[in-house]
Amino acid sequence: MTLGEYVYCIIPSKNAPKEFPVKGIEGNPVYSMNYKLLTAVASKAPMKEYKPTDENVEVHKNVELEVLKQCSILPVAYGMVFKNRGIVLNTMKKVYTLLWRSLKRVENKVELGIKAIIPKEKSELEELLSGKSTEEFGKECRKEFIENLSKIAVSVKEDRLFSEKLICNQSFLVEKDKVDAFTEKVAQLREKFKPLKIQYTGPWPAHNFVNIRIMSGGK
Amino acid sequence: MVFVVDDLLYSLTVGPWVSIMEIIYGHSLNEMYPLNKISDAIKENRLLYEFGELTTKEYDARKKELMEKLEMAKKVREMNLGARLNILGFGG
Image (cartoon, rainbow over all chains, first blue to last red; front, top):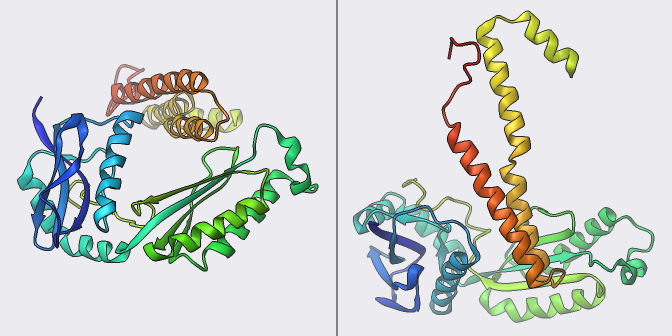
């Protein structure tokens, strides 16, 4: 099968290493492709549709996280593979300004996520619910999280509740030097809503705050 | 609903009738193979596993089932891509 260029993210060219100490799709080396002040982080990969299997998504995520350790990144959607280097660079050229602006927007910031579910065993929740329906309680919970955490975050996004069991799904864009303060606040909220199952994740690349389809069909 | 569909079918000529059949077919396709619902179920399965509400065995079994459903839904859509129903033997 023909090999193309699988792109993981875009980073500033300044101080970008030529290679990264992480394996890409199918174990291939991950390297840089520069265009002016921007660099695409890519690896060789077969030209095919990439199914969102746990294994593939894990590889994509690991590369992003490795690069994120070194600099700010503009994440590229999972599964974007280009025919060759020329097409990647040409696409970057076409949307250069947009990419640069988006990168500036997420510079020195990371995404942190909060999800909460009602546990299987509801009995412990009775006191916290105090007669309210799950919907009402969920609404209050989301409001309280937003009120407390948006004071520290730069931006907040209420994500879709894709499951009936999910009562809170929020993403926060936070400056790197405020992550500790944010984490402390989350710990306080976790204590307050104790029987609720709360998942606090990150730091992630700002997938939920870069609202453009980067390099999709060259647009 | 039955009244509306009957009413429309009796009042229209063959061309639009075929289009209505296509719309109904499209709706039933979405109901039988709902891509969005399957995607949400895949996400929910992962979420519940991460929260420790499902065992690895339960998670793997559900994941397998859902991935098969997703594949099937995609295949059904690919098979019908751009195809028209030609149940009356003309038109289209």
